[in-house]
Length: 185
Image (cartoon, rainbow, N blue to C red; front, side, top):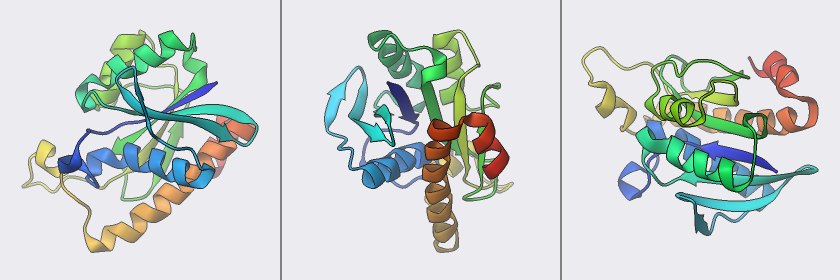
């Protein structure tokens, strides 16, 4: 089973914010594949289904962003999964809104949710998709910025980015992460 973690913060206050783009990606996958996100277990809201021939578990950690690794580690242990079986989707302020970047490994790049996952798992070697949410304006505090909502102009770009993310997940499972990197990066 493949585990797909979309990072974000739980609760209505954080819905549709930049930092919750990982939750939005999991919701897009849920909609595309009819995977209901109803189960609450192991610090996450989740649902089982299939993407193509691949059995998957979609997960939205409910531990708040900075403690995402607690949920990821619990699922990895419960399903006896290896880092090769997981995919993490999250926001990136270094990318323009809607742009995606796929990597098979790498540092946290300053992202506290990913930093916590790396600390919990003891490895940086796991597949990830970063979705651009735009650069922080100079006068903004970073926390305020990532917890802000997208402008009307950015919304269309974000929808396109989420659609590309769904396509990228499909390609990762069908052809591998290298093929997806070549196409989407």
